[in-house]
Image 1 (tube, helix red, strand yellow):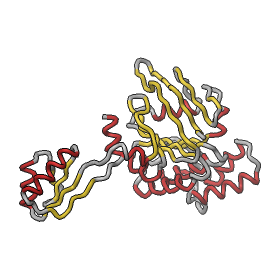
Image 2 (cartoon, one colour):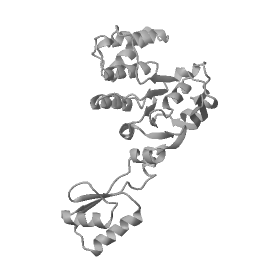
Image 3 (cartoon, rainbow, N blue to C red):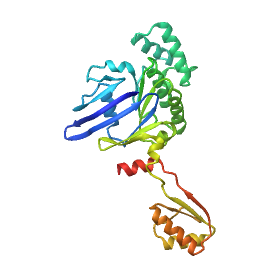
Image 4 (cartoon, rainbow, N blue to C red):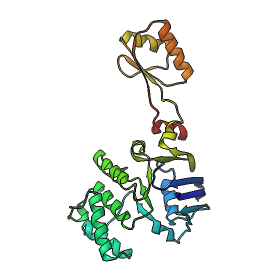
Length: 298
């Protein structure tokens, strides 16, 4: 079942066409990477999903229910974490979650149980300081706890790791992995390594539409290879190959890298064999999402 389905979504801001026929489907219990450059339309899409932004045309469905601008009944299925979440800074994490639970109509026993459970999940269970002293990473973790309070079917995260240091990014990614069994995660980002680490599926947003979508394995298989590394026994052998084939690039003293067609690679190998050039390693470079994304969106 698809938790989210978007059909032919279009949105203009004046003369600028931001979304031009976007189609997207997000299956249940996936961590779905929504990938695009800054300004590609990721946040615009998310605001439309939440019913906060009126599209020019197209349809959006959350859990099979149609989303209408200004009528946010479908948001009962959604938890939303903006890129810079805001809180009442004078509260502690537990006080803040208790307030959110009361506002959303949860009973007190459920609020207490769920708040403590979620604070433990995000590593803030023993944190009793005021939120005003929190780092950005701690605020992101508290934001995830808040979004999960009502057990949403879809958790939307708008670039949650973009301004975090490596340790903070790891903490957020580990939490998103941990909640996969509880909800479906739509993870908007331009950091491809994060997508490769935690996402099960992904879509590339380019020129206002989805340029490519599939599982991570399917996307990687769009390209058989990103090239080859050829490591020779002596530096002089590498020099010979670079002189014979101008597209080869040196990466180390005895190592060169090749990016090109299989036919050209076979020609290099034939040259190596015919000239008895001593080679100690030939390694295929595995394709990455980053290289595929750059190729699709260039």
